Length: 376
Image (tube, rainbow, N blue to C red; front, side):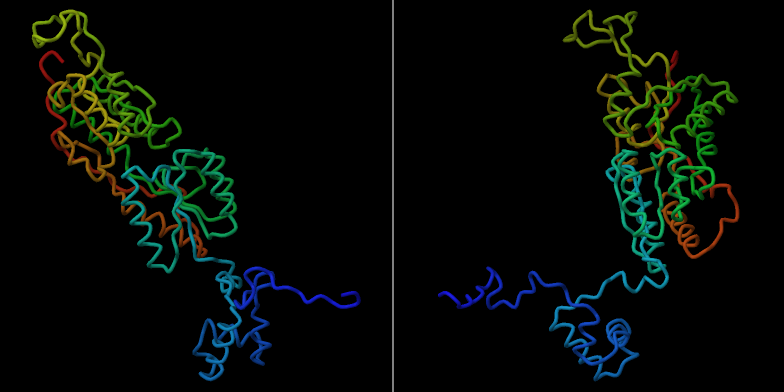
């Protein structure tokens, strides 16, 4: 065997398979060389077949397929620097409030020939920042739906890529929001007209811009209407959060006697009352629905003992028992308007005003609100 070269044995998986493992992928220059044409001709044949003769186009496609050539999907965007892709970031995709927003955003993006990428940050500002930093150089812009980032962090990203915030106002960044002031005025006025004078606001996430604005608006209109308004929370913006709020709303009444209890109840067990309030307004519908369930579980009736109002008019808010009175925001239009404005910015348009685009809200009265019980 000395002096003889050993025959190279095929690597596993290579024999008889024509595998390209271990070799670089073919390029447009390889295809051009094989066909005897310029690389620009190959590019036109694969992306704009009408600009190349049928014979040449057929030959190029045959060679490209045989060689396993795969065009770079981003290559056609290099001249403009755009990928025709935008990102919509939502704080919790499990929250039904985002479904119509996503639908509106997707419709607007699709009509413009853009691809919409959806990212769920699960209420985490750290995750939101990480997503944006990773996608910064591969997308044309960001649409933030109820962002949990600080204003400073949002502005930092907005200086590098076009951005629109929805359901959130950040100075120097274009935004689209529902009319929270008008909506809270309608909700408080409705409760006042029913005879309620003590209202509790169930607070959502402390980092939520909408939560801060809704509480501020309710407090302001409450003073104008002569109502006593208080706030509890913050709570997770979920049904479970509403149950926790109900437990905090309700407290034992040591003055109540056992005459109103069933025979099987212990004489020492306290009657549950919501002594500090006759009506509640939840930061969102999920909190309000959870509060109704929790109050019912604790022996209180909605709306006989406590009236409940939600915000957003999500799918299912009219299916619960009782159907929920809620502040409806134009969620689908919110998503569509935000994306249309973002696409206009990507194409070079400048915002006409630094003021946010404000969409009207509407109070939908259902069966979860009624006049307070006597003495409540």
